[in-house]
Image (cartoon, rainbow, N blue to C red; front, side, top):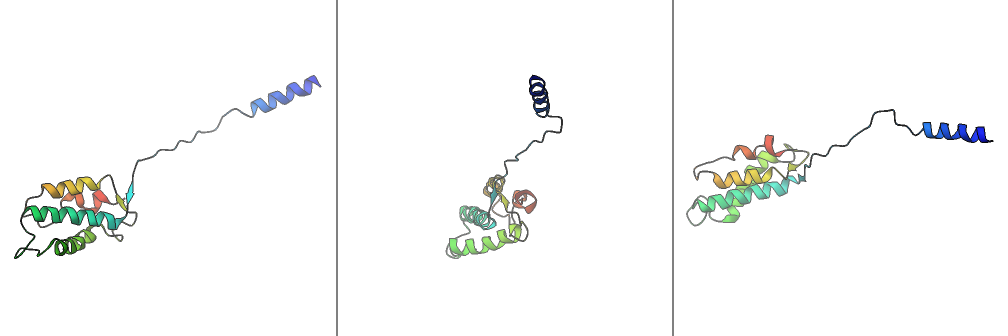
Length: 122
């Protein structure tokens, strides 16, 4: 009986050894944002910039902030729509875009490069 118990312990303990490869999990820390949320944030930043450039108001490029938002949403949607960015928007990259908008010259007609799909799409 003592021999069987000893042999059983060797078999059980030997079966617990790790001889195969060990897998690891790496997380990237990417946070996805819905496209429409990003589109609204880009439009808000653009209209804030246009307002600072005195382009929003009576007899200006946009009569109101609402009119500006409508146009800027269309522009942002062309850049980062669900069709262009089907996996969503990188929420960590969006502040680079909105900050770049705030630094734009008042004569800049297009989105800065930080707002292109190359930088924002997941």
